Length: 262
Length: 327
Image 1 (cartoon, rainbow over the protein chains, first blue to last red):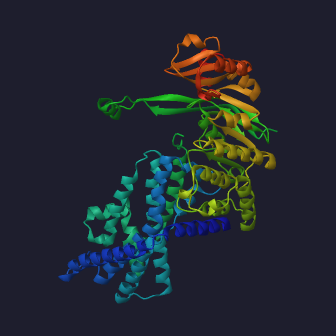
Image 2 (image 1 turned 180 degrees about the horizontal axis):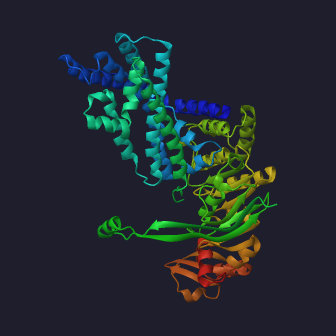
Image 3 (image 1 turned 90 degrees about the horizontal axis):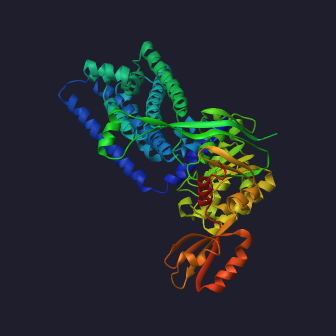
C-alpha cells in the first residue's frame, strides 16, 4: 500500500512538472469552465423563469445537480480523460508492454499515471456552486448528511470511472475505440439536469442502462439531505459492482492482448 | 540450474485473411475469413545464469514472439516456459522485479521530461529507496557515459543518448535476466559500439543473464559466445557462435567500384559474383583467401573504391535456408 502511495506521489509530481510548462492553460481553462457554467445556469434559468419547475426540483436543488455535474467534469479533466485516453494509444503503439512489465497493478498505473491540473477550476467552481445552492436551499450540514453526500459523490466518481475504463479497455479488441468514449461523454451531459426532468423512458435508461442518475441526481439528493436508505444502498452497490466489473473486465481483456506487432 | 527454460514452446495467432481492394474489403466485412499463423513452433532451450546469448533470425522468424512469451506479455499456445523460477504469464511481482525488456523500437521514457523524472517513477514502482536509487543511477550513468543528458527533456536527446537513457531506466531495478530486442537499432556505429561495451560490462559486473536479438552481426559477434537461430518459428541452431559463423558466413562480401564497367567473367576467378551493376561489383570471397584475393583484385584492375563487410545477416540466413543447408 505504501509503495502505491509513493508511486502516486511521484506520478503526479512528474505530470504536474510536465503540465506546468504551459501556464496559460490554467487561465484559459478557468475562463472556459466559468463560461460553460454560466451558460448552463442561463439555460436552467429559462426553465425556472416562468415559474415552472424541472421534474419537481426547486431552482436551488437544480443548481446543486449542476454543481455536482461541474465537479464531475472537473475530475474528468483532471484524472479520467488524461489517463484513460492514453490506454488506446498504449495498445496501438504497443507501449502497454512496458506497463505490463512493471511489478505494479496495471489498472492502477493506467488510471492514475497522469494528473492534469486543468480540471481544478471545474472542481473548485462545482464545489462552490454546490455549497452556495445547498445553503440557499436550506440544507443542514448535519454530520450524517455530509457523510451520505461524501459517500454518494465517491460512488458517483467510481461509477463514471468504471464505465469509462471498461470502454477504454475494449480498445484491446477494437483499437479505435476513442469515438465510443466521446459518445459516453455526450450522454453524460444529460447529468446536468435532475433525472426526473426526463420522460419516463429516458429516466429508466439513465438509471439502469447508463447510470447517469447515480452520477449527479443521487449525490445531489444526498447533499440536500433527502437521500433515502434504499437509494444510498443502490448507489453504493452500483459503485462497488462497477468497480469489480471493471477489474474483472481488465483481466479478461489482457488475456486477449497480444501486443502490437514489433 | 537454468534461469531460462523453454520446453516445446509454441504460439499460434489467428489473423484476418483479407485481399486488397474495396470489393474484397466489403466481402471481408460481411464474412470474415481468418487463418492461423504458427509464429513459434516447438522451441526448446535453456540458458544458465550469467550467459550472454544471441537470438538470431530473419524478420518474422518468431524472435519477438518468443521474447514476449519469455517476458509474460503473451500466453504461449503450447509448451512451458520458466524464467527465474517463475511462470512468466502470471506476471507476479517477484518475477517482474527480476527481468527487464528493452525494445529498440519502443520507449518507456516520458517524452516531455528529462530521463531523471522517468527514473524517479521507475524507482517508486520497483520500491527502490531514494538513496539507493541515486547510487544506482550514478553508477549506471557512469558506465553508460551519461551526464547532463539525464537532465534534458527526452525529446531533445539524440537517438543514441535516448537509447542509453532507456537502458538506464530498464536496469535501475538491477534485473537478473535481460531481454534485449534490437537495442542498437538505428544507432550510428559509435553509439552501437558504446552500447555494446556497456552490455558486456554490465553482464560481467552483475553476472546478469542476457538474451539479445539484433540485426547487426557485429553486436552478436562482439557479445555472444552462444547463439540461438530461429527460422519460420522453429529453432534451427543452438550452439557456439564460432561454429555458426563458419557454417553461415564462410565468405565475406567485397564491394568494388571500378574505373569503367566490366563483365562478370572477369571476376569469376576471385570468388562468387553476387551482382554487377555498371561500375559496381559485389563479390563473395571465402574468409581464408580474402587477403590474397583482394591483393590480386587491386593489382589486376583499376579499382576506385573497395569495401569489405560481412554479408547482412538476413542475406546469410536467407541464402542458407534457401540452399537447405540447415534443413
